[in-house]
Image (cartoon, rainbow, N blue to C red):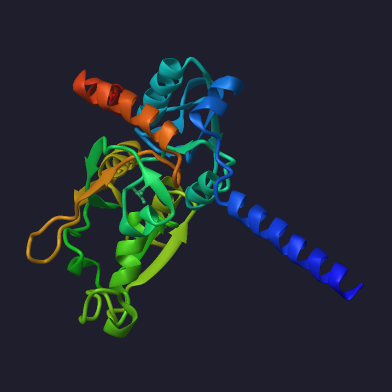
Length: 277
Ligand code: GLN
């Protein structure tokens, strides 16, 4: 009887282990997607011109145009899910979404969680502020009330620079903003954060270049200025779409369309289209 129990326990452990393993790869392959006839994109439509709520309450933008081409090349329908930015990677890992497309910067940390496509756009961090403010460098943000979108590269860079050396990775220096009196507030979106500049709750919002320019354009009395380091060096980042780790068939298909669009100059065209709106 004891033996039977032991065998049962071993069998159960094996089943659980298999479940856990397959849990890591619950994603849909290219074949699954084509069989179902729908590909699911996860995004956060608060990041014009890459994704925003367009006419008829539809998510539109550069990333949507690219995604439509991917769907067209695969002969499937595109379904878009609009969620909080910091939940996109989790949704791709769990297989809820097939790919993430959200002006998402490739970072070493994220590369551990998902696989990225070829990079399709370069960006830098900008400071959205009142027109009469004079914030140009990271150092200028000492003592300032800074807003960001939760989980974005703007958030990471400010958060890191608020820390003491011991709490930072890959450096032995305190962050530029450490003990300067600067504060960081994280919001669900950069446009919502930026509304707090007008009321004085914030001095500025740190966000990627084109979304920063879009916010400044839509808000009278605001401007967007590139954020450099004190020595004049720039922040540089590049965007890519992401898929679940190991989903090579889907990633290859995405890369093929992405490369074609870049070769045809289409991505620049999409950026222009959605910027002049
Ligand atoms: N590029 C930034 C990042 O990846 C912001 C993206 C976004 O807010 N949609 O963190």
